[in-house]
Structures are given as C-alpha cells and as structure tokens.
Image (cartoon, rainbow, N blue to C red; front, side):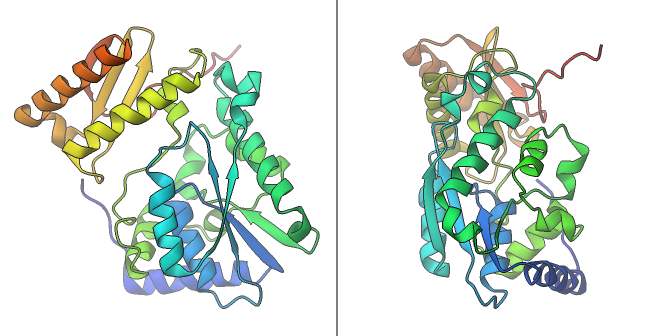
Length: 283
C-alpha cells in the first residue's frame, strides 16, 4: 500500500501547532485505541514538556482487537507513559447492541463516560480528555464525534488541521516503530453489518479469524472479516487479493475457521471501506 510522506518542515510546523494546543490546558488525558492516530497524539503529548505529564487511557472490551493491548503496553513501557486501562461497558447498552446506523454514538458515549469517571479527580483540576480524531474523519459518517462533543472531548489533531499522511510522518519521525505503517484499526463491531445485533461471541470470532489471517498477510495489510446477513465475507487489501496463491491460502483458512465456529463462509472480496455500514435512509 502506497502512503504519502510529508516534508520535514511540515512535520515541524505540525509539532508547533500541537504543542501550542497542549499548552492551552492544565493537563491532558489521551484516549488511545491502539491505532496510529491516537498513539501518535499520545507520543507528542508525552514529549511536549508539559508541567503535568499526560495520562494515557486505553479501554478494553470484546470489541477491541486483542492484539491492541500488548502492543500498546510495550510502547507505554518504552515511552514511560502513565497508562491507565479501563473496561468499556458498551455491551451493557441495549441501544449499542441493536447495532443501529449510529452505533458509534452509543459506543463512544459509554467509552467517554467510563474514562471521565475513572479520571474524575484529575478532571476537577482542569484536565482535558482528548481523542485521536483527525481531519480525515470529518469527511465520513462519525456519530462518535457527537458523543465526544457532549462529553467535552477535544480533538487536537483536528484543531491543528492534521490528517492521516501527516500523522504517519510524525509517527515515523518519533520512531514509533511498527505503528506508522499500521492500517486503520476500527473496533470489531464495525465489521458487523448494520442491523445485525452485536454479540460478544461474534466479536470474539471476528478477532480470532482476523488474527489467523494476519499470520499470513502480516500486520501492515488491511483486512476485514465482515459478518453480513449472507454469512462471513473477508475483505482483503487489493494488493493481496490479486495474488492468487495467497488468496487461495486465505480462502482455505477462512472456510476452516468459519466451519469450526458454526458460521457460513461467503467468500473473499477486495477491501472496501465502510462496506458493513448501511446509512439510514433520509426521510
């Protein structure tokens, strides 16, 4: 996959913007999913020389890929982050489990409520909760941004006008080995077609299948195990989908894992962003 790099001067200017934003509050808590956006934001905050070191908060739940936490813990140890782990209770919300078109709103509402509760003593002293949302997110359907607004969450990358190419350039500059090349890491619930209820068992199955497939494709390739009404469809990075020998191997593994899990396997397709999402009809 070809990725756009940014000039060194642009990276320096981005740092200056972010450092100015971080200086605007008495303290920061960075919500980190484990993907390159939020991890890079946390790394910049940690190195900004703030009088109060940032708190890095990661939520675990069945909807979070299982490889996110160990990868994040390893980086946190190396970077000496104050990493806090919380349990996101989104599955306790019936509205979330129903998987409507605005499911992300209920997910982020549960996430930010949990994080703010865990950090309530720090928030009373002026600490601000921040997310890794960036400029590229503004052109998509992101109901989670509404939840963020309702909970007072700030988005420093958006405030600084920073999008994905710059984020990857910053991550590379900071030496965040392995993170700058990671594909997007949305939650596992995003693999389930709108309207199909979110079940913990389905999330764990998706996580298992994608883990098996990454043993074949590597962690830099984009892949999604989609649960649709016709069955499980696995979407592959087009560069991999076009290699028949690799695709055949993946196809065989998918069929095996689906059969063992009691799922109908509906085949391979080239990756298409947001293909499990069905937008609500305008009335």
